[in-house]
Length: 193
Image 1: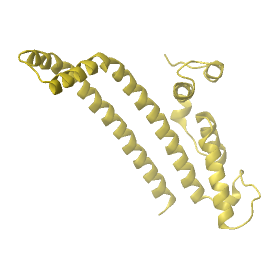
Image 2 (image 1 turned 30 degrees about the vertical axis):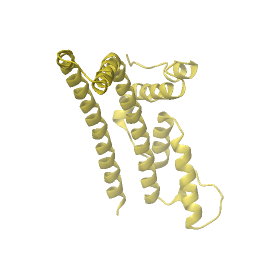
Image 3 (image 1 turned 45 degrees about the horizontal axis):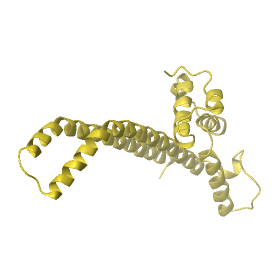
Image 4 (image 1 turned 180 degrees about the vertical axis):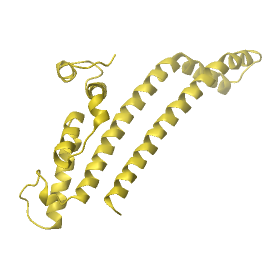
């Protein structure tokens, strides 16, 4: 497979994964709304006759769901947001891996002396990709620009917003959603509201 075919596959896979997140979110919201619209009917029907213990347990579960559904809706947005950012980071890692298949690892600025041959090149590539995968979004884009001469005009146009989205995901995952000094420092020029 040629490099452009790999890149196109990376893009197609990423689009498919993003579409799956959107379909999951939409399907979940439709299900919640359907439940909320039918819940009064279910209660009315339940109250019209005597029920056994299994039916009572079932309606108790529905009552519990009805009480918690608004918090579930909030959580589903959070989960989808986190997944979207994670899939974007994985996509960037896949792109880097593809670019290294295109360009010999030995010419990389990141090459370290760990031997010669294909095995050492694979180790270098794996180390670079691992380091890349743990870096910030801003550092990832900078790395791709500096090492592969890639240009990202749309990302540059919306850079502060994108950086804030990525750092928001990190705050949610790693700091219980509590904004800290690191977050404020990274996002001091943000326009996101």
